[in-house]
Image 1 (cartoon, rainbow, N blue to C red):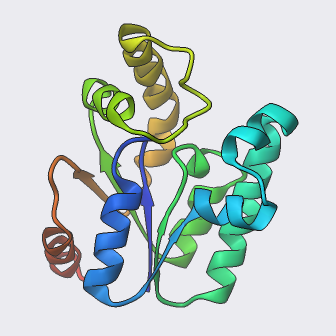
Image 2 (image 1 turned 120 degrees about the vertical axis):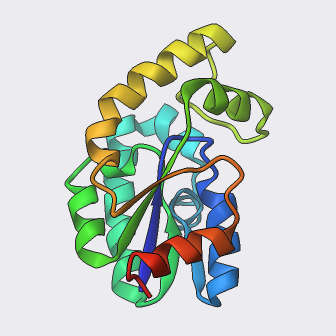
Length: 171
């Protein structure tokens, strides 16, 4: 079974994804890292030297590549991945999609505290960042809400996520 973790940047997709994969004893893929490895460019370089559209094309290409090469895996997507190129439908057809949901204030705090370079938010101060996140979440929610499972991701442990999946009949 493939488990796709979706949600806004800073929602914990990579962190929880690694833990979930370890707990299930299956492979873990971080789509952003996979893109960087295969293009030999950082996400920041792709945004600056190519474009956001080029990055979205890479996302779709490498999402399909990961799906085609694995049956059982946890895949942490980028925050915008579900919103482009019919990716949400593709993920729903090929596994269980789990939306890690947070409010804008929590996400802003997590993004500010993170050491990760995030090209889309570098220019914002905290209050601007919160407003920008609120706008983006409103735009992305129609895609995120298609997930098989929507959870409040604050302090969720992989074992609790497994329990939810089992209760819903996903094994």
